[in-house]
Image 1: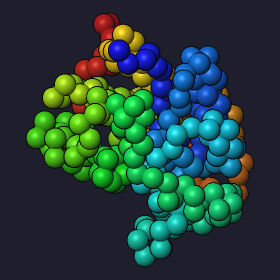
Image 2: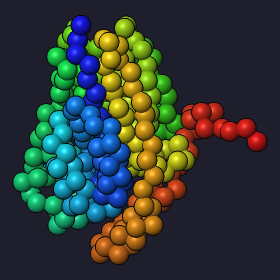
Image 3: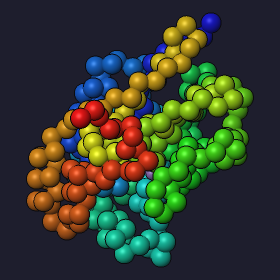
Length: 254
Ligand SMILES: [Mn+2]
């Protein structure tokens, strides 16, 4: 019998210190055995230096996000808006930390290699496992598309990913596949920050998706007061778009 274990998973903090503070307090209360950070730690504007400090203090197992790579990508691979954010972040964060984040490992194996953590897919933080975005809406990937992306050790019972900014759970070929919701930039109309608690009890895995409110006013005030910021990010924090695919899941009775 494998030992009971609890693993807190956070992802896509995107530099939001205000969400990180509340999520980390909630994680601490759960007293997990391990904390895993699935990446995109600082690519955002709600006090990324403080968000980085909070994440460093977690001593989490870390994997690399696509937006961690963006911190040091050559500008010819970036859009004009990304070039501006990259330059702004270079003023906010030490170079060695930006280099470290951009070169983190792509995957981590935990709990006797029964849990695999990655940002997008095990092979790439830019790809996605359970959903894809077709330019207009999210679409669930077919089982075939998911299997193509899971060239992983047979010991793995659970795969946790982030990147798509939405919560999802799928069982496939006896494996539990989990998309953990982000701390920042929700797309179901609910601005609360997300994380997940993964637990193995009596050899059975389960997951709880958590949603945590944070100080939206303080977050907005910080973004408005910092020089050189693209304030359009404010809207993403406070008024997240509603993804049509998710509407039926958030509809409530009149
Ligand atoms: Mn990402």
